Length: 426
Image 1 (cartoon, helix red, strand yellow):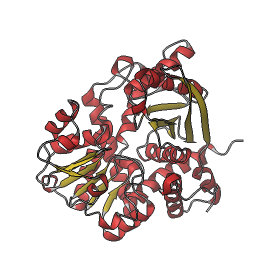
Image 2 (image 1 turned 60 degrees about the vertical axis):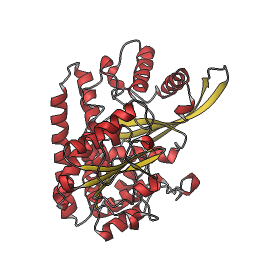
Image 3 (image 1 turned 90 degrees about the vertical axis):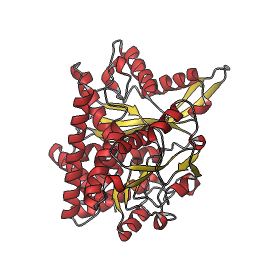
């Protein structure tokens, strides 16, 4: 094994996501027989940017925040990856997410490398003005990195189209002209794309349907539990419900609800959009997030944060199919347990790639100043996801391995081939 040593655990005792990402890469590199030099190039991130920057709060105090932007690989094109605002953001988390973005872009054939960013903060404790000031100052710190030809941010945990609008406006004001292609996930009014808000959830639907065919699960007979009811989880729930899947449990950061007969998803979405809490939705039983993962369901969709499925609970998961709508929700130890138990897992770098795929469509539309209708966006997305799933399944069968390693083999080989063709500068 080559590369720098990193801690085996993140703060608080959780599995270190960067160790997980490197271990997954190492397995694929071994299957592909990559030489030591190529492993060394692809195993480490290319750039790590840290900024400690001041923000003036509403009461006049000056507070220092820490933010990161990491670029893992730029061989196949500009870096692409979201920016998250969360109290638990760490450099190793951002490095892992950047690496996963490289593979996610490669597995879907997008001409991007991988990046990720984050600021250590709790947006819920900030006013709108404080959040805007934080976003704009962090953007100014990142000006040396981001731009349409170099690094294109997007929304992630606790960031949205408004945050992207502030980033785009900040870059545009500093450049002296509008640069809509510098971010994706923007509002439609300033160059956003139709279909972007539902893209990740729609991609989850496509690969879930494909995996059900592989496993022999009939959608109208399947029960589904979804951990995380934010944008990705709620859209996934809505689209799966429309296709006949029975959603029996969902959760957010406060906990979840369970109804074995199935949840009325349109009514639940209306309840949430009206300001209601999941726990107050009538006719349901409350269930804690850890317990939701172990419910007797056909399909489990973790759509929250990393390290949810671990050695501690993998043996109690009852689902036949796990679809990773979140990034890094499963540790390598849990992967091994699922494989031994015959549980099929669709990996994050494939399952949640719908978002970056439509981000690519948005970037292309911005660059050419010509926009597509939502039906065309959804059709293009479906074709990309169906093709990518088929290629992953084919490689998994060829290497007699899991879908995760099939996806990694496809992605890593594409980046390795590009690296080989370009050569090592100088």
